[in-house]
Image (cartoon, rainbow, N blue to C red):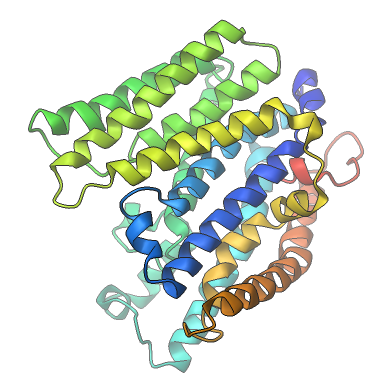
Length: 354
């Protein structure tokens, strides 16, 4: 049966919409400003990576909400059907747009692997797990979706094994593994593995720890200890990159620390977070995230860069609103109907649409 405490928590999750709105805008501005303002990338790649800040904020939000969704539904079948209808329709639309655009432009920019195995390339990318099949991301932003999908698999395994409530020990295990694989081993001259291979999951699990605290399942002292361990993980896993010719640890470290700070501050003042504009941005944040690269084709950098930035943002909000209304929302509702909930479906709550 669904967890009643989880259902009560769902009523207090509107602050997540505000956070996702901030995260979506952060990713958009990171990419847009990088194209429009020459000096922006110099700061982003040396001091503070705004895009990574947005991604880490998304990961914390996902870690917070996904266990709530699974525990509330109490069924892996229901959870996965709703997840599939939540994520894939809009994602497949972006793939379709890219294919149409590629055909219209003579496949400019498509990698050699696409022409060698076009069907395999497309089918692998349809899964969001294309890297596991040896194909590159067709949608550049899909690398974060791949981590999200694998996190769902991890949470589902915990649920199936009856371990979903054992958040703290599982999180500690993942964090220690991340520190060893991404930080300590490279520093000692061992293999340099991609940053985030484990630490991103540690970040999401930390979001789950924050949920456990909000639900009264974790003491404040234990929460502080876990936050401390999480910050150590976020910093230590970046130290391995010092060995690289162009280390990314400074700008990512500041971005990660800022993501934790913003999440905790907004969570602490969650009852005051009632800004409708931010909550609406959170509602359409998935559309903002996937659709924003397409708006960069409207005009290019010029002396009127600030004006173009505002124009891109306005166009993006129109497109994202449209894709949410006509793609996301209908597919979410279809997923809900197909799972036939025993109780009547409540009025649509933006914070629980995940």
